[in-house]
Length: 79
Ligand SMILES: [Zn+2]
Image (tube, rainbow, N blue to C red):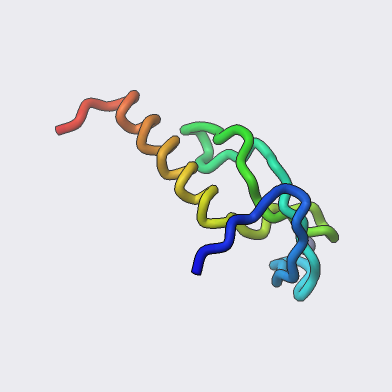
């Protein structure tokens, strides 16, 4: 079963900092590596307490992977 998260949804999560708490799905620009780039308008779960990104719905993971592949293909030729 796959549930699609949408902006503004809240769910209970376990935050590294805060433990069991609530998070809200928000659209953010997220950097997925130190230097390779940022995925814009990505839906992620943000801890209501400390504002850290605590999880990423499956649909966002797919988006990050696609962006990452693009960056790799752009920066080095396929061998
Ligand atoms: Zn937190």
